[in-house]
Image (cartoon, rainbow, N blue to C red; front, side, top):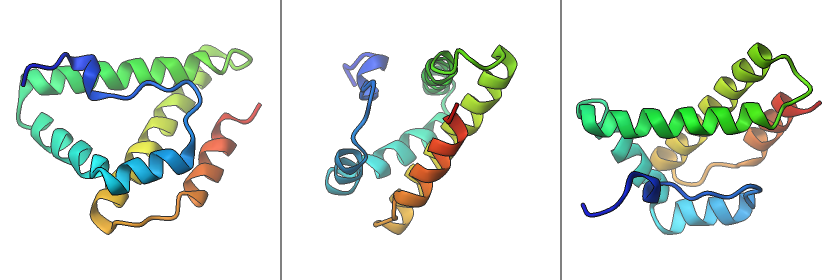
Length: 112
């Protein structure tokens, strides 16, 4: 493949939901992520890369919740990442999914 593991993800501190939705729909990004996850389920080397990226994402979310006890921040981060993943999977399968309910739920999860 010739790419580093970090090249598989886009790093944005404050992502623009409209841009991400457009990216997922127009560039088949959501389908690519679904394919990567499916392959990771049967490929230990790819699974290790995906697990590491998910851990980094969960840690980044938890780190943005400094007012919460660490165990609560980590639990929130786990749910946050799972909800993001669920949105991506639905977008890959259904096509055009309204991001607003997901955005409201994500915002509620991390609200101080």
